[in-house]
Image (cartoon, rainbow, N blue to C red; front, side, top):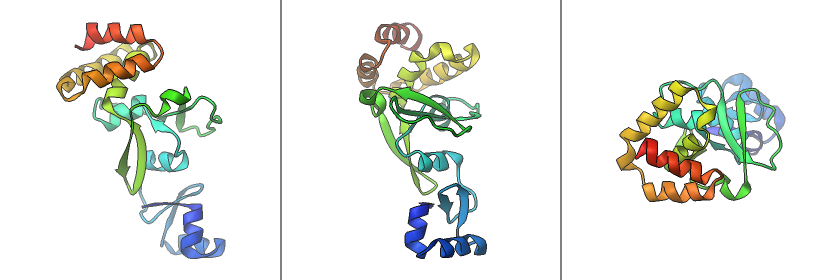
Length: 180
């Protein structure tokens, strides 16, 4: 399970006792302000703990849902367009309008932490919306994997999401031509 620094202060009582717990191995400091009772925790969980208002998207979410076998080098995190820039070299920050940031966002439990991630329907929209940002081979791989699960997706929800985000006409055209 993951803990914030404040959680550790509450649990152990003081900075000194938190430091002693880390030294004795009762808890592990995984990152600045992020602690765990396990030595190894997924980096997605750590990133989600550090940036709780962000939503995993694009390459990170494609990998999470097994839509690609390419392990992303960085964590793709959608944040509000007015959010402060994330100065973490492990994170690629995608700025979204406030009204569509949580559209299709869901929470999954991983390593004792809740991870905010877009559902598969929203990810299909994001794939089509950001088509030009991917290499051709990567785009085709993810698209083909979406085609394999198309009957598991709610197409009406995909269309509803497409009408909410920018580039609606491009998304709908590509959906018809390449996916369905």
